Image (tube, rainbow, N blue to C red; front, side):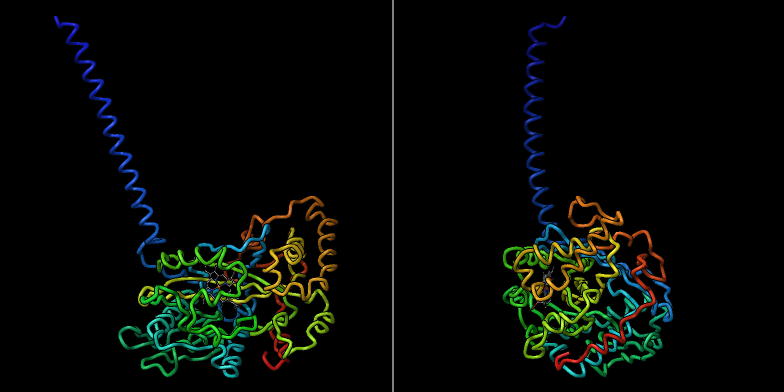
Length: 442
Ligand code: HEM
């Protein structure tokens, strides 16, 4: 027979032991979770993505003939409410260097602009050698894998084994001899191959700041030139960008510090002009070149106005550790977007009621009164046709940053297809754009 006193004593001891064990466990686990949180935060801070190398892109079996009728993803980067934010998205690497029916026009314009304006649109500092070489190799490898019928390899050799390649561009029929030693600067080859503008940014270990060390930017769109940006820090480059210091600087710095090679992102910004010029759009013309700017725009039918989307990507190259920023302008006429719910309403709202410094930076005041009644007409038309209701709340589209029809109407080798009757897929403004080049700085 066990003495009940012992049972009570035993129970009491067990409970107190259990309690203290629980206490210790909870202390340990709280310590663990704190250190785990610290470790997680450290890991997060040190890396976005893992160290896994990027997967090569998926081949898109588009032929040179199909390119001439190929539309790229339809961007609609209109946000309301409109705040200055990084607004970046994970980039599917298949879309790093997109293709579309304006490829030839862009490559020809690049050639013309670089021949005529030189260092105003392309330049490199000595410190960029490793990065520009790596960029060239990365662009070549991407294009031949992604578009096997557009870029063929005539002679294959590893760039890092001192050999290099000979490539045929099947769209322009140009043969690019990139065997080593190179005959031209790597950025010149990149410029002949891709439609994008390229900015190469490196961190200086002395002051830990990011500098633009090389750039091939024939299509800045505004009135700045590479010669004003090369060798400058990202802070200086963005000094005129509205709300940069308050809204962008910190998150951008953090992003660049942590970004890994397998963590590419994309974003898009936009403005409006009444032309298709790639180097300097009419809306950013300086009075010294175009004193009659207002008369020029007032004589232009509002249906000729285009949204210029600046489609941008960011990635880090693994060898040189350089950051590659690409920018690619794409024009969408307001007319071709007129059947898309809320698009005219968003444009009207932003050009009149957006943040005032952004309105100024994008020169919206220059032309907005001229197109206001056209936009009002399009909004009324959407209400009359039942596309939107009078009281449909005005806010960023659920399909942002793309058109609402984009995901449902994708045809692999024929590209995206705008189903609006206002859009003609076979239309191509390349010839018209050439005739628009009339000013001294075009
Ligand atoms: C996440 C990264 C970045 C963000 C969020 C960002 C944001 C912006 C914004 C908001 C603008 C104003 C035009 C617009 O509305 O889009 C701008 C302009 C510009 N950005 Fe960036 N940017 C980034 C990275 C870069 C990088 C890496 C470069 C390379 C040098 C660069 C070069 C420029 C240039 C040259 C301009 C035009 C400045 C001018 O008008 O003088 N940006 N950027």
